[in-house]
Image (cartoon, rainbow, N blue to C red):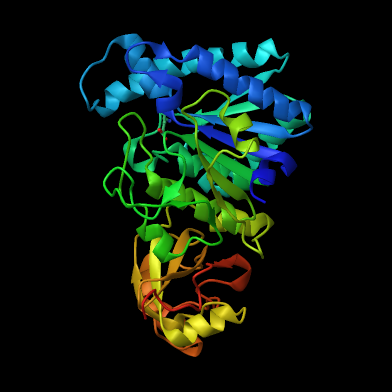
Length: 381
Ligand code: GLU
């Protein structure tokens, strides 16, 4: 069933981890890239649209610059990204060009997807590229992104791009072939999981914190990516890219983990809310509010037990149950100081406390997206 996910996908985002593209000593792995691009050209030939999220700028740049040492300083990795990105983009352009495919480079920072207006701009440009049959090659703009406001890993960036573009499949190629019941490098009894219907806390507990030397994302960021993707109706595959022609291998049925898309995915505007990467605050709510939210109501101040974070009106906040489960995300209608003042109050008391006539809901239902763990107790309870 899931091998066909690639055969039937019309719009596919392929994310390539740094360790696949770049060898610490030899630099860019030309043969590997050429074979991958053969696969991509095959998908396009078959009628699919393909978007590439390519890591490797920092890894390639540090090789070109001869930077040694395990950990680079921030300014060194930004300089390395600058040198590496230009080489990376030209390699993609050259390889896609062999198949008479045109490529377009897109470098994004976190704000480009988290701010609604910029998100729509990026989406419009990428749509135009796809209409022109160009292959978008996307990476984080590491050279200008500062540490507090960055994706930091291309797994989540790729999920954000996939959902922004309404892709039906996201493929994460890395040096692991999928999800195991425990990190396989530390647990010899770990067994492989070919299919995940839903990313529950039990599944998340399997990820551990493993990271490979060259890339920033581990299994945890891959599962974060999976939550963003599947909630918006994009299936996800984690597959090994350590062999040549990894996409052909997926089609041939080599093993990988497939994550099913949500049966009732969020749509349009709500996709943007649900995929927001860094909520600016948290609202802890009581069980009555959770029940109300589940029945499609807005979040009123009365059900809020605790407010944290320095958010402003219009920012995304996480709505959390008292047991810590995230139950929804939404755009908050008040600045944090006012939200603190009115938390727990009846709607009729709000105007007196704030000194102005305000809207009733803390998060309006039109600006709210339920999480798949809403209404379910924590594992083991
Ligand atoms: N944007 C980084 C780069 O191109 C990669 C981030 C990641 O490894 O996920 O080097």
